[in-house]
Image 1 (cartoon, one colour):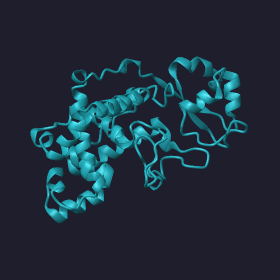
Image 2 (image 1 turned 90 degrees about the vertical axis):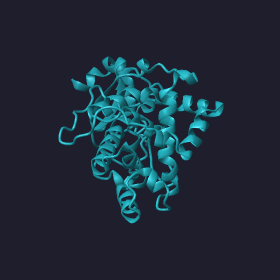
Image 3 (image 1 turned 135 degrees about the horizontal axis):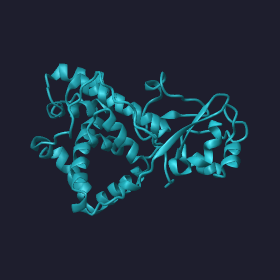
Image 4 (image 1 turned 60 degrees about the vertical axis):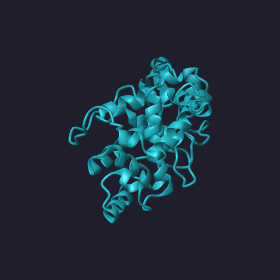
Length: 281
């Protein structure tokens, strides 16, 4: 695993115009006792399930601090961290069968106004940008449904699909919707998996899951002038070009020789920031 991806130096400003109840998502008896949830709880508690969960959580270490800072700044429950685990296992190179990309699995048509996607750059793989987008999307969903499980379901299926299913069935909760045939197959398993992994991870020590969250790095986001190549960045900083690429998986083309015609934003661990101070000269 690479040593890190994209975390902000400072968390974004909270959105004060929309209210979200503080605290955790309440996972009550109805949710935990549902057969669909229990199936996934047993899977995650199995030896192979715990190995897979530990692997995904280990993959999340470079991203953990940024995700938590972003969720807190938006006033969102910290359990939403596990949406990214369900989506991609925290793999920035993940691509779904439908073409969704990155840790938070955005489709290209859903980000056309606020993420750059070209032959050189795909900001869906930029963990800093994508996490902000996911927080906005989850917050938007909650303001519509005022229910976190429905908000999470609509992250997967789309707000319109969940609204139409609720109107057609009269269902008021996700579990009532699950009793209908109006949900996509993926969404039917998506929310139960989220509930199950949140529950098992909340008992991490009991299951031998212990990760050094304090080692999740701080990152700084730097503007690189147009037509500055990665070779120049590497030569001036002394940091190998491949390491810079590893930190910035949204750079998808070989721009080492000529750079981009526009400003390129890269993410550098704060421990390396002093190697790049010349960028602000």
